[in-house]
Length: 161
Image (cartoon, rainbow, N blue to C red; front, side, top):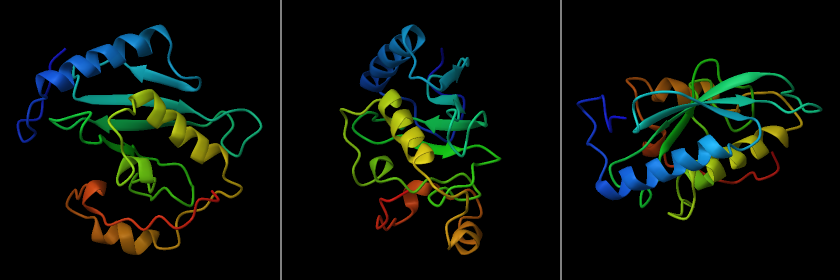
C-alpha cells in the first residue's frame, strides 16, 4: 500500500503508517458489523461501505464514508465525510460533512477507525427523522471550493439524534 496518492497532502508519518497498518489488519479479521472497507492501495484514504441495520430508518440502505488520514494520525483526527449521496440525517449535510464531536473537538488518539464508524452508525440509527440540518443550504454554499469540514467551527448542541 502506498501512503499517499495526492501530491498536495503530506505523507503519513511512520507512527501513522504503523498504526493504520495495524488497524487495517484488525479490520480485515474482524470488521465492525454493518461496515466493509473497500480495497485500495492507498493507506491514507479509506472508503468504507456502511449498511443501515434492519428495523431502522436506514434499513438496507448503503452509503460510503471516505476517511482521509492526516500526516500525524492518530494524534490528529482523520477527516471523515459521506460520499454522494449522503444519508438524510439532521447532522449530515448534503455535501457529506458530518457534525459529530468525536471527529473534531472530542477526538482522542485512543479512537480507531472502527470506533469512529460505530459512532457514526449509532448516530444514524438513533435518528427518528430523515431530514437535512436546518442550515444545510447555507452551510453547503459556504463550503464551496473543497473546504474541509475540519475548517468548520462546529456547534455541538443537539445530542438527541
